[in-house]
Image 1 (spheres, helix red, strand yellow):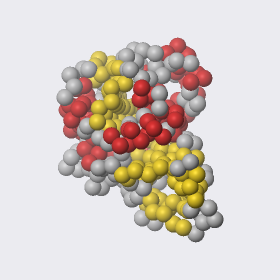
Image 2 (cartoon, helix red, strand yellow):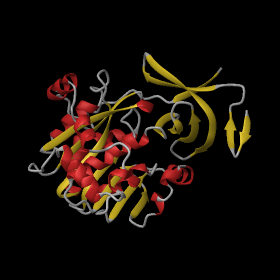
Image 3 (spheres, one colour):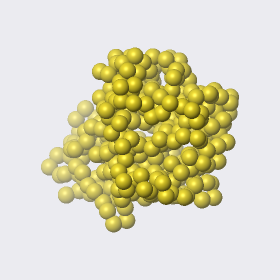
Image 4 (cartoon, one colour):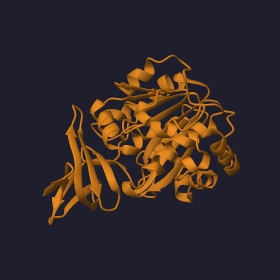
Length: 327
């Protein structure tokens, strides 16, 4: 394998990454070069150039974000919540060390402060240095980056401090610490208390396809519905995740005008986001209508879901890293 500008090139050999999605399902894609690799106190951090997805970020060998479609994921995570809030000024991000979530939040003209808490400084420094689209995000004076446990930091904030709280956390996998941030206790005792009047909480909610949605997507929705008066589930296919991905958006106030109509979304994008509709690649009013229009299978599962996630009764998604296979 040769090196060019610090990247390890594969040369005549082809390197493939094989990811186990379920016990009996794997997929595999080619790697053109290893751009950078580093080890933190918490995980292995790698940036690769792949065939189908361009640059991808791996944490402990598991794909977290891909150049080809990360804006789809992050625009879905961020903009519906901020657009539904009447005047979002203060935003808290749980996780998000990659910087893409903060990047999207900071496009909103009304935002005065973003508190982003990620436990791994190496990931934040790595992404600031190697992900060109996010380099300026880390320099924005409105961003307060804290390296710590997100649950502890949010718990120490004043009650009613934030207009929007965003959960951009690792998936709840067995043996990982993040499952506690998908529980009724966390939502009731911490998240709800820290939201101000009209506050909105949104969290990534794992795979939401026809086959995988009952793993954590519908239980997260059921759990949030046990705490908040209104919860909107939505999903979108993310090619690099090999499935549809889900989000759940919860409203502190029962009388929140949600969901907004397509024309209202478009008007707010134009009025409230720097650069208007040109600043977004994926999200607009018609898209919002589409991602909230769930299939009959999903609607039935959401209506029949009974499992409330607690510290004592969690659920986990299948999670194993990626192994390298040379051919």
